[in-house]
Image (cartoon, rainbow, N blue to C red; front, top):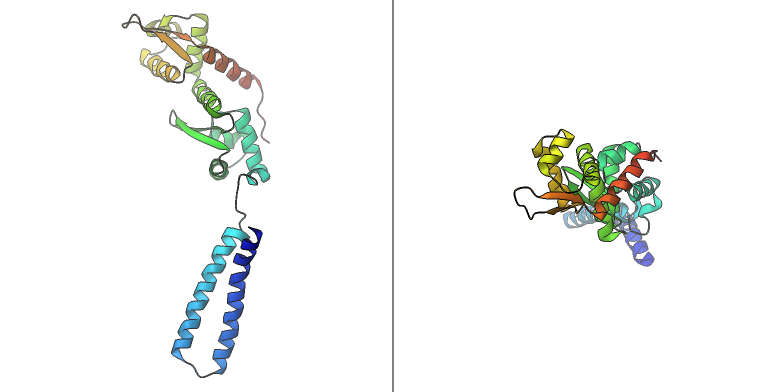
Length: 229
């Protein structure tokens, strides 16, 4: 690989030197259109080859899984997502004191090298580590859902009052039943709650073990102060 890289870097330089030499010879001889055109085409090819080589191997370092975390910004992003899976772009940028566009660029590099994945939830794209597999994805989704106060209130209420139906939850929390229904649907799909639908008119809900764990983990994260790296 190193030999191939050296060849790609050296070849355009060699072509340019060869062309300059040819141009010197042409300048000393009577002008011939065919030679002039040939030299011009060669110059264009050499310039294009030099530009491609510069951006691919020279001026801009190619990002791989081996070197992607060599940059402090990306290392901080990776560690933050490890600590707070399910965080969305603007939250990450704010906590790490980065511009959203800058954070987005580096997050794409982490995704391209298969260290981080993202998923759109509730209109926002949230991030989590690939390393944890399905468990990391579920944790990220759970944390993303529980960032909404109404969702947390519903989960907390069901922890203390399992087996309640939608209208009971809405009345107890003074929420519109459509709002409760929307959050219940998301939490049900994320396996944070389960339901007993034996009474189809009034299905009742209760938190799953995963839901209890997710709520506790999220509460611990809230208590822990976040500091920008």
